[in-house]
Image (cartoon, rainbow, N blue to C red):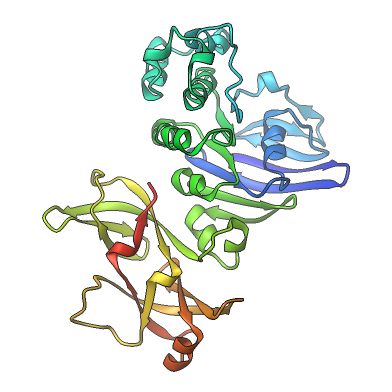
Length: 357
């Protein structure tokens, strides 16, 4: 368990954080520029000294302002991946990868695993300047991992890459997430990266944590969507591939609210994926319909009804423990006489479900 509770004050900026993150998986720090994301991970790794508070990894205290404990960065056992690879240009890829390993006991098989997972074997004898931006970042990630870190910190590792290079690197980070036994703190202000990679989300705004928890719950919950810049309010589901209907080209998914079918996904059974459903793609019925083409029909209750600045109203629905959103015209809400607490049926076309990875 990683525990961080501290305050950093710099000129007119004050950062106040208080969170616990799991011992594995990806915890994302999300917020716009200036929200305190980088300051938070710099405090965790020792590059910034908090004014007050504590930082602990399991039973090991890295910082305690009361007890006067401030473990040096080099002794904290953390791996750091920056926005740019920051590789030594005069060294080969192999020399860059192994640079920080002298003080560790990592085994040769572990070295080979990291190289293979990141697809670096064919680059070992090359210099960084001959690599693409995405390839250099893969080397930077590999170097951080080969230091045997207790935690991997990633500060917007895709920010300096174009769209093509981002798409190239995302699968490698996703694979690491599934294989590594260490926690990852991932900083980003791009919601698509968060949805692909994160398990837990900490939402920062103006130096304060405004929400934290499982990524789907934070994004779906309350008025949080205003922080993400999502043009149309959407629902995000954390799912597992349950089975495939090969001839029908349909994949059935499991999530906390039940089962949902979508167009065929070429993923093995048991694979965890995230699905996005735009609020405008969820229709509402007062009675359970029959003899229609829509396969995904959920009995649910209206948790709240929100007016927005447009000519629509947003319904927050609860499907068991999962929140989903439906956007209707004001006329539809009036004609159906919809009110909070009312039982309704949510209808979702399989073709309206976007799989994010």
